[in-house]
Image 1 (cartoon, rainbow, N blue to C red):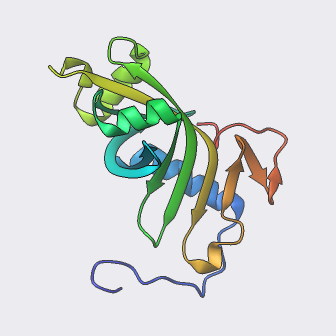
Image 2 (image 1 turned 90 degrees about the vertical axis):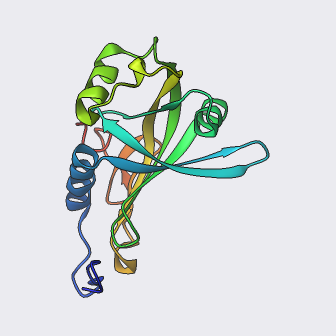
Image 3 (image 1 turned 45 degrees about the vertical axis):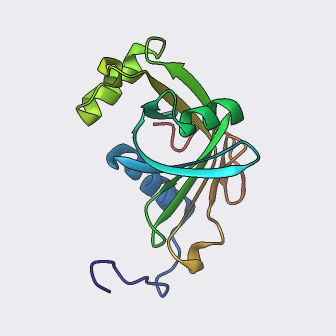
Length: 173
């Protein structure tokens, strides 16, 4: 270990596709924060950390309705989400659907509030919910795992670099 960060172990064999899928799903179920990247105006980048909820199909985010993240994701219709650090990377690219707090499906908003102990629908300022439906997922731990890092492409789960017959989302739940 270097400080509090584990040393990168490139002597271990790379994880297989199934192990990477399991690891990604575990993170989606247990982690609380995600880095949200968007672009606005003439492609100006914007990056913020937000709490999230994985509902088994999509990632739900909540943030003020008037901030640049909401505007960029609404106007651009897509986002890149980044989990973890450079030791254990998960990148998720997806299409975005934006809901006003009064229009969000109750099940998603209730689950988000239960997970985080905070309900954006009760805030005095207007909040928006952002549903990010994955269409590409990459996961790797170190340079030795770069080959095979693509788990999903064009909304289809990959099996050895090609879409699987079942398609679907990262593990489906």
